[in-house]
Length: 603
Image 1 (cartoon, rainbow, N blue to C red):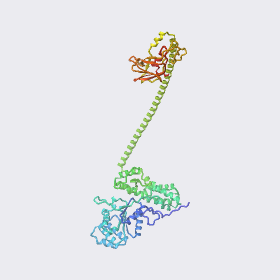
Image 2 (tube, rainbow, N blue to C red):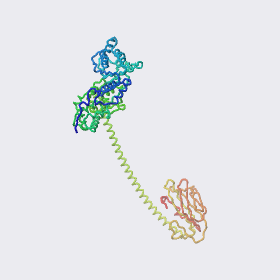
Image 3 (cartoon, one colour):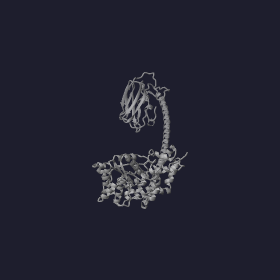
């Protein structure tokens, strides 16, 4: 690929000619032209090398083409070691030269020597310029910050411009007069005397950095193909942020360096131009920014401290009334975006870094900041230590809780195992007891079959004993049976507890049931309990006496259910009572005695 460049394409110093190929048109071009064409007083106040003078030249050319009378005053060309009269005379003389009315201006100036310099300037503008020209008259005043170097105050100069602006309300010809002020200043800097009304007129024109779309024209001078040029320009803007001077400077160096063909090549060029120790001391723009910051008339320590905050991306609000912020903006090192200050570009961010701030900080303030920095480190270390300790405590607590939980779980499993073993053993004992009761019942039945009639009468007189269980005990349901036998003989094959004897003899058709209730825990008689025996056809109830005894009415034989209830005790429900009445009503004592240790068994 053949690489070439146009040595005159880029302009890296001074004002661009009105037909310069590398001139980048911005929104400010149209805003300034439209404002001045409409007769508005305008001002373009920003940092150096932002293209103010080039904008002025282009706008003046456009206005002249529209028929306006235009004069351009560069205050640096008037001089500094002058008296007030010489300085004002120089201003009006340059206006006369540019508008070809020099003789008329000189005659007017000499003929009004009784007036002060400012009065003669204002009268000459009003009487000579406005009478001579019927078109729009525009006066550009460039480098207005040069007035700071004059040996006399110039507040009255800007006050006079404001007075001409205010008089336009009553003078038609003054409405054709327009001023445009350009320089490195703020409106509040133009009039220093607090007793004089500030310079608060006109329209501010913001002169911003190039956008990528606006700067696209600069790729033509790189001497690369279109795609390569576009990518390399994008990398240039990555470093310069669209700063007019820096962008033209880097583009020119890239165009001259045939080895730079990609982003790495652009980075190498920037390193050579700005980042070496020698380059930082020699580049005009970096030198201006540094001097503007370090030689300002305000507190240097406070200024560098505020810049440090901006560089560390702290939220510093843009406020033109703040002298520190005004210096930062006019030096060009910062710009405003969304109401807050930001470092203007990556070149400034890297050149004017933390080491540069510390190196230029006044000794006392530097010492204070170092102490504050060390305190901050200690504070951060203390906080970090507390956080680590808390984390360790939380971790230890978590492990301890886990260990306790595992131990509790183990104990619970062990207790459950013991409970299951106890239940198993209790069931085995209950089963064994049940077998013993069955054997006893069988033995009693066999013995009963051998009893005499009188003995059977004695047994019949025995009371049936029922044991009640408190409500707070484990509720159980027990089943037992009533048995009424007609004869002495009991079948030897009778099955456990549930069998009655078939009788061949005739027998009475009714019988009674007696019983006694007592508390299972205290063995005390239980009074006030209701005992009910019933089936689908018959029902009989009785209430236990103070001795716990009850007597059910005469009932016919049959299969009954029996329930015992009491307000303070669990209900007992005993089903399948078979009542057979022949000669002898007998209640099996084995059925009536429900012992405390048997209450956990269900049949």
